[in-house]
Amino acid sequence: MKPVFSLQNIQLGRGNNFNLWIERLEVRDGVLYSLTGPNGAGKSTLLWLLAMLRRPESGAIYFGDTLVHGTRSELKKLRQQITLVEQAPYLFDDTVARNIAFGLRLRGIQGEERNNRISQALEDVGLGGFEKRKARELSGGEVRRVALARALALRPKVLLLDEPTANIDEASLQIVEALLTSLPQQGMTIIFSTHDLDQPERLGAEVIRMRDGKLEAATYPASPRQHVATAEKITWPRPLKISESSYLWL
Amino acid sequence: MDYLLTSLSAAIGLITQLNQEVLSTVGISLYTSLTAILLASVLGVPAGIALGLKQFTGRRLVLTLLNTLMSLPSVVIGLLLFGMLSRQGPLGGWELLYTPLAMIIGQTVLATPIVANYTLSVINGADNRIMSTAMTLGAGSLQSGWQLLKETRFGIMAAVIAGFGRVIGEVGVAMMLGGNIRGFTRTMTTAIALETSKGEFAFGLALGIVLMTIVLLINLFLNLLQHR
Image (cartoon, rainbow over all chains, first blue to last red; front, side, top):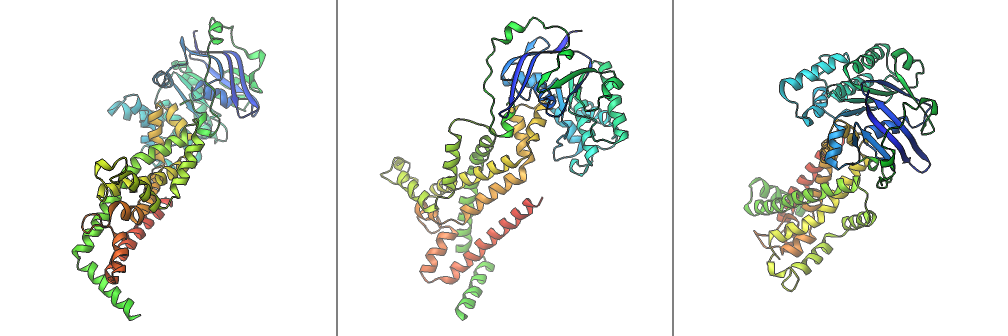
C-alpha cells in the first residue's frame, strides 16, 4: 500500500524547550492509526504538522509524491485533502448547517449535493435534524459531533482527530468508534490520538507511540523511502513565535 | 437659571422646528464624519488584522506609532495637515484647504489609528482556533482572515463606532482644515464654539443637544454590541 504521508528528519520547535523530532514516519493509505503517548509527548503537534497548519523547521514532508513546501495556493490544495478535528473544536457563530457548509462551499460543492452531504454527515454522527440549530446553543458533546460531521462532509483523504473520544458519553463513544473502524474501509486514512491504551486494539488500529517529541523506536513503521537525500536540502523559514496565531503556517 | 431655561427652550424650539441652519450644520458634520470613518475603516481594519496576525521587523515601532497617533490631540493633526495643505505646503497646489475634503482627510488621519488599534485588540483577543479551523476546512490565508473578521464582527463594529465617536466630536481638525465656513465646512462642534462666543447660546445648545444625542445613541449601540 502506498504511503499517503512520508516524514523525514522533521524538527519542530514549540516555545523554547520543546522539539518534535521525527526521523521517519510513513502513513499508509486507508489505514486507521492511533497516536498514543503521555501528555506533552507531541501528539497534537504532530497532528498539526500533518494537517499542514504548522511548518517544520527542518526536514521533509511528502503527501503522496508531493513535497509539501509549496506556495500558498499549493498548500491550500493539499490542505483540502486533509481535515483536522481538534479536541476542543471551534464552531463558527452560525447554524450547524452553515458550519458544515463552510468547507463544502470552498470546494465548490453546491445545491442539492451540499444539502445531502450536510444531512448525511449529521446522520452519521447521530445528530440528524440539527441543521438549523445554532452552534452557540449546543452542548459540549454536540459541538464535538458537529465538528466531526463538518469534517466527514468533506470526505477528506486523511482525517486527523485529536482525542476524539476523550470525555464523551457512552452513546457518542460508540458512534465515534464505529466511524473510526468503518471509514478506513472506504479508503480514508485516519490518525487519532488517544489516552485509552485499550482502544487501538479494540478498533484494530496501528499504533504510533510517542514520547518526548519522538516516535518510540519499536513503532517506526516500515522502512525509509527514497526521499532522505532531498530532506537535507530543504531550508525552512524560521517559525514565528510571538503570538499564538503566528504559529500558523499562513 | 432663567437664562439657562430660556436658552434650553429656544434650543429645543430650533430642533423641533427643523431650523435650516441647524440641519445644514448637522448635515455637514455627518457627511464629513461618516465619509472619514468609512475611509478610516477601509484602512484601519485590515491594518489592525495584519498587525494582529503577522510578525515582521519594525512591528513594535508601528504599534508605538499607532498608540502615539491615537493620543495625539486633534488640533495637532490639524496643524500638521494645515502645513501640508496650505498654499505654501507641499500639497498646496491641490487647493484643498478650507474644504470638506480637507476635513475628511484630517478626520481620516484622526480615526484610522483608533480603528486599527481597537481592531488589533479584537484580533489579539479572538479565539485562536478560528483561523486554524478555517484553514483545516480548506480555506486559504485570505479566506481564513475573512472568516476571522466575520467571527469578530461585533468587536470590529465597536472599533469603527469608537472611531466615529472621536471624529464627530472633534474640533481641532474641523476648525483648522475646514475654516468654519457657514454652510460649507461648519460642523456642529465648530458652530457651537463660534455661536456661543457670539452670544448665540441657544443655537450652540441646540447643536450640543443634537451632538450629545448622536454620541449617546452611538454609545448605547456600542454597549449593545459589547454585551452580545
